[in-house]
Image (cartoon, rainbow, N blue to C red; front, side, top):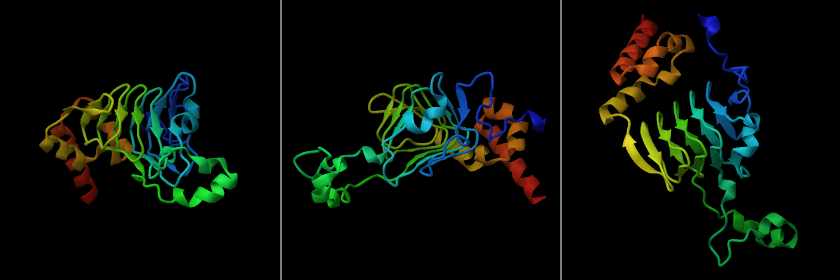
Length: 221
């Protein structure tokens, strides 16, 4: 059974479909962190994720994406390097063009505030052409609708859509969401995930919680 489990370090987990790539073995930029089994699907430029989908990554801020996320074609992440100074009359970025302009204004850029890292949780589905703005935090199990522009944080197991993205509905009650977050199935050993893959895809939060209890008992036995 174990031999049939996809290898997390395999760039093309389905060789017959090169449009699908696991991102963890693809990314090389230290400012981008991706968990195991998170994939990106793009028929034209799947392997160009770092340059075509992560934009304006000029600063120290990181893009952190969890495990088992599904990212559709055209989903993009705007990083804090896209921000312009807004404390004066003009937002034109004189500094980036160097020379005297940079000499006279470089210190001003140090005053630009950012929201920090952009953090995507585990088991998040990001739809076609969605746009995630700098410093956003998206909770575990969330769904981002196609074309959504995410300007603010998204709660776990919440579906959002629109521009700017707004909550459409909660996937589960607060109690069930708490069960799922406590179970954190994405942190299970992949062999245990495989054993319970049908439950993960079609079961209830109570089913997942029961499997998590079983795993804890095995670990303490």
